[in-house]
Amino acid sequence: MPIETAPVREQCVRAGVLFPGDVPAYAARHPPPTGLSLLHFTLPLVLGTGVLLGVGNPLAKLASADGIDAFTFTFWPTAAAGLLLTLMALTHRGTARVDWRLWRFGLVAGAFGHALPMAAAYWLAARAGAGFASLSFTLTPVLTLAIMALLGRERLRPVRLAAVGLGMTGGLLLVGGQVLSLRMDPLFIAVALLV
Figure 1 (tube, rainbow, N blue to C red):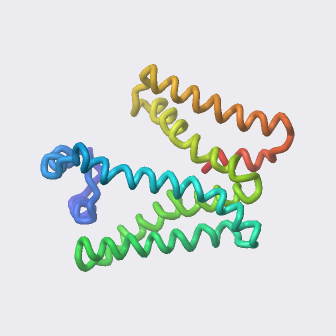
Figure 2: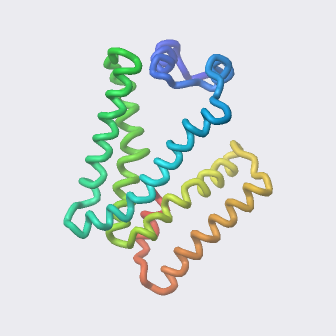
């Protein structure tokens, strides 16, 4: 029996959230870009995200050397991104209605999906080094695929199994080398795995 109720579903649809049953109808009305338009749309987003995530940890280490703590370093870019997204939503959708359930969801998702993990990664970069902190970003897709396979939500094909194995091997080599040389505090390893 679905958990969703009509008012919640209506608000989610207005906010642009799709339910699994809505995807085929949405895809029929909004075909994905193809060819050159796909490249022009997707490539800048992927490259921009990769570059910005890649420079975050080294910049956090430099900021820490100048006396800026991880929470401050996380807060200002997150606040700017939130303001930018709010302005984009207002210009795209018109006047926004204040719905406290969606605001509450946004705050919780923003805190636990972005702000706290990024603050932890930046704290880790300042203390254990930017390279070690970057481990948390590289292990995320590997651990996500492994967890989804354990939950039965994703089939592990041989290529994916090899990818998970290689990713875990690389992570274990990096972490294991640090642990065996007694240069890394176990707290840092736990934070890297939690991010």
